[in-house]
Length: 266
Image (cartoon, rainbow, N blue to C red; front, side, top):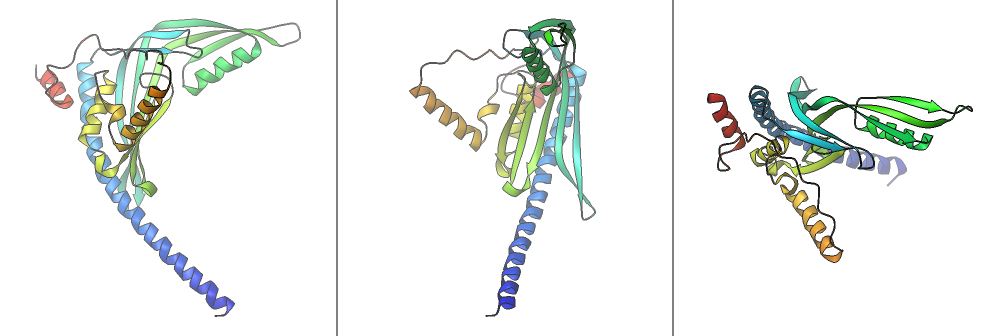
């Protein structure tokens, strides 16, 4: 076989593989759209109900270093939107974005000594999208000796539910939900449904839940963590998750949405 014939054969083989891959991506796009469409309907209803009921959901957040915390914050302003993608003149839901705020009264003051410590706290607050002002005190040579931070008692929370078409998965990314930081949870298409949405809803309103162990990947990670913990010294007890002051449910037997709807009818 000549050089040109060999190159043509390789190109044809590669072209066929790419066509198969594109077909799989198209199929995954349709499957993800179906799952996200159902999820969007559920979450729009959930957030509409929360904006009417306004359940009391207190939160607190430890800042950099774990010494100072924002406390007595209450959740409010629930917003749910679908992000869409157009392919071949057809609209598909690419992601669901949930937003709300945890807001308290006033602000707190934090003082840091030395320029590295000031920069460290500044980066920490920027990373987590917290609102703050800082007054830097400099010495005669212009170097920062200390910084006085004024941090607003407000934490923005974002939940993004998006599709990973190459791996046929749904990914839920939590940012600043319960604690500062970003955490990702992964589900195969066949396991992303009402159960996951119910558990996510319970996390959002600080109800007892199994969200972090729902799904095959989360269960596998939990099992691995448990095995490791057996081999290690007992760790310090985890921070308790704040519970709402007012219970927004009539009983654990009902689903989350049924409980909210029953409150709306009163």
